[in-house]
Length: 165
Image 1 (cartoon, rainbow, N blue to C red):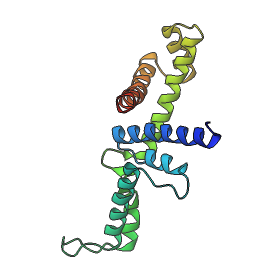
Image 2 (image 1 turned 30 degrees about the vertical axis):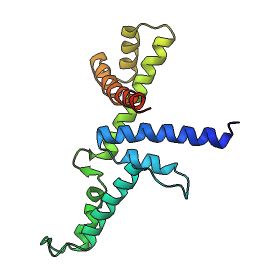
Image 3 (image 1 turned 90 degrees about the vertical axis):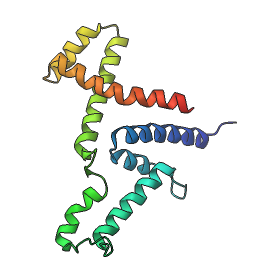
Image 4 (image 1 turned 180 degrees about the horizontal axis):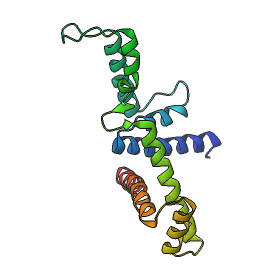
């Protein structure tokens, strides 16, 4: 017999898989933090979360205790503290600005969902795009592009999930 705890654990695993795939595709560590937020205390982290945390810990340690062998200079604490976002992967690299990117992914996903709902309700795609564009002060082409980004992110995730299942 399936219990509510079993269902919750199953839902958590599915959400974690989606977040892992989004993280691997985008490199945005905020997907890791989203997974961590709902992780039960005392339950082991999946490897992908553990890898990110180890990389981040190494980055923070490097700021705190520079490697003499590598010739890293001591950074003044006032400078080192400003580099924490980079050590956590929130800036630089693929993420550039992880918060801006994650907000954009979320907004684009909401537009994709709005288009899906409109089509389910019987609206033509063209009419729905026009309406969404008007409501967001955008053009239909901009909306198409943003929905395309969201579809690419989540469609790949769905394909990878079904391939790995």
